Length: 301
Image (cartoon, rainbow, N blue to C red; front, side, top):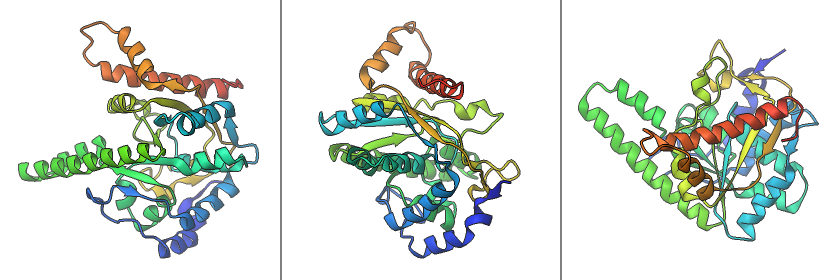
């Protein structure tokens, strides 16, 4: 029977909060957060208990070739990954480390996730949950739109836009520094977790087109299985998510040259296409979905 995160690990979160050091409020000076490895140990306890033993990485050779393109060839590396739960980021790090090979452990250590500031600002428990993983924090478009709708004056709306610009400009600079250090940027192109019955939550954000222009190589990682599911009775409270033992499989596409991928999509569009950026992202999501469906049907991809 499913149990909520809060019910199962309330005491664990209390322990994590004691060692938490992440910022409770995000501004342009706090957009890069290095992983708290002590906090990560607690998170891995959750995965140890709820990821079944046959969980793992599919197409491991693709993960390795991508890693080698970053480390041996000096390419800027981007991971675009499906998003079903707040265990998705821990999952890729955990499963890479579980490979037991030096390259896979080093790969895991290089991953920097792009994360919305809600994960820092929602609550102390969510913040402690999140800070086990290195992140660049952004002000997401969806959050800005929601804030603008709540603004009671034009001055408040303008102030929020300025705040978002400052944070996101600083985040882009932080990502550039990460690339120069050989770190690998991981982005969830949907910008939010998929909610069953809401297909719009599985659509890619047009902002992802910018990443395709800024990086050399990418892999697209689909996810089958989910050990932490949205609670239909309380979908906005991340600590009310439901824990379910499951086999979790992450599948990597072959290594893709970002520029070539983008150019191929754009070349097939009519000259008067109203939104070519969205079309490049739509194709990313199509490939991710094809991988997901193939694995679900028993294929290897």
